[in-house]
Each structure stands twice: as structure tokens, then as C-alpha cells.
Length: 190
Image 1 (spheres, one colour):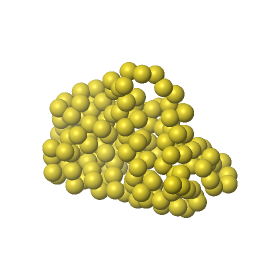
Image 2: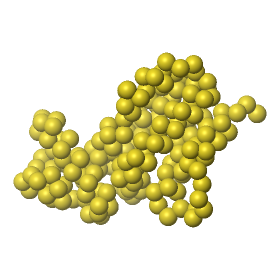
Image 3: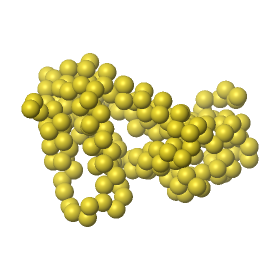
């Protein structure tokens, strides 16, 4: 396997461009080579199968959606509590909406994984790692809620993103206000 991490990243970014523009059906090794401006066969040297290519795109999505430490630092210095949890989730929603092509690509990959067992295994591992990191971050930051609330939050945010980035309910709403209500409701003590 070629060991040039910069070339692998270049190919993954080109693959995300193809996925965003053409969907999973248009994503081929040749299309990635063309989008990256590289010779035919380059993507195949880095990603031996379609599942490997798609799985690498999932990993790259999470890298590109990673939070900015300059934004996290002032949040980390605040007192833990509900307001801080809300601000963290606002920042998650902001990042997802700021990069709609990445959020939609992740939905596309998840749908493709429902039909491709090899991709399901690769993408499931990536999604589990992200979930586990979210749970650990929440606990380390002293925020309210545990793994169950984080899981429910994932479900809610995924639905919010789907509604925002695809034909949705058709009714206007304030994303910021909805996000705050989601966090408060998921963490209220019954």
C-alpha cells in the first residue's frame, strides 16, 4: 500500500467532492483520480476496494468536521452546566451546517453502508469511535448527561440535519432555539 499520507488525503478530499456532486453511484476510483487531477489507477493503489474508498471518506469527513481548538478552549474554561452543554451543541450544529457537503456525504455513506456489509463494518467502527469520543468528552467536561443522553442527542441532531439539508418539514423554525430545547429536554430530570 502506498505510504504517502498527503496523497491519501488529497484522494479522500477529491472523493468527497465527487460524492457531494454525484452521490454514491458516481463515486468510482476513476472519478476520484480525475477529480484529484491524478493518473488513472492512483486511487486504486491507495484504496483497494470500493468499501475501502468509502470507508476512508467516512474517516476524512470526521477529520474535516473536527472542532477548532481555538473555539473549544474558551468553552473549556467555563463552569460546567446546562448553558455550557447548550453552547457545545450549538457549536456542533454550526459546524455541521457550515459544511453541508460533508454532512450530506456522511448520510450518503450511511445509506450505502446499509447495502454493503464491508462498508457497514468500516463505517460502524468510525461512527462508534466518534460516539465514544463524544461520551468521553462530555464526561471529561463535566457536562450533564451520559452515554444515553449523547445517543439521543445524536439521533436528534441527525434528524435536525436531515431536515435542514434535504426537503424538510416545510415549516420555518429557529435552529438555535430548537437546539437549545433539545439539549434541555434530553437532560431534564424527570
